[in-house]
Length: 325
Ligand SMILES: Nc1ncnc2c1ncn2[C@@H]1O[C@H](COP(=O)(O)OP(=O)(O)OP(=O)(O)O)[C@@H](O)[C@H]1O
Ligand SMILES: [Mg+2]
Image (cartoon, rainbow, N blue to C red):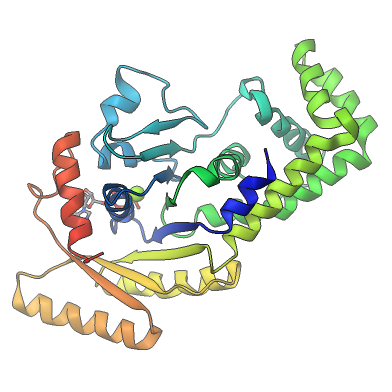
């Protein structure tokens, strides 16, 4: 971890895609990412939804889960298409403490602290850690990060836990002796214990300080309107529009970042009556919120064909192309 990553981070943008369930977040995320990559930018897509649909949407499920099983385990980054710099990171939970490797060992600390009741607000730790660590380490290497979220503001919960993490790391320093004892008593593999202790307490806790710095910069990034662009995917239906209003205020309240872009997906262009009704709803939304709204038509299943890499790529081009980006 070098601080040059931090400096690089300040020039970059995270495109954070949220929206109600099933509206097309993953399709739109993949479309945006592929578009940027085909323009020559380097892009990392982050599949932050535990249901992981990006491999399907890119048409590379086989590549990810098939012949090379385990290729996309937590923290691993895979190349989506060979001819562009479009990479994919799946955030997966890590079930067993012993599976944390390298710098992930710092996770033990958080888990132990949580078990010992020093702090509690630390949901989805391993996924969050992977998100933060990957962003931090590879910030300088990508022009864009496109984050595909689970329905609604999912990943924000993880980001909100950042202060809890920092508190946790501070408590390690404060209760060093107790943490040391718990590590020794709680984990059988002595080599792992030693490694964890070295990471946590070596050189006067330098690694812990570095992690705190990393977490602070990630928080800064996620709460900076300059680098972070929340994009809400919606569709022109009342229930979805209601949820979009709610999401907008949630984003603003939790991150203090205004939402400027809403992409209305699955717009029924063909039926004139439905079209008229839907356009009225979208125009009203646009007027009420002052957002920039884009429209993607409802495409027939043979156009949205995600069955293999070639057809998925074509479909995603259609998706991105329809919003004239
Ligand atoms: N413009 C479109 N026209 C037709 N079908 C679409 C369009 N956009 C997305 N779809 C289809 O709608 C379904 C849901 O899309 P997608 O998985 O992208 O939604 P999501 O919001 O990511 O869902 P989830 O909330 O489950 O993550 C998929 O089958 C996708 O192929
Ligand atoms: Mg999805």
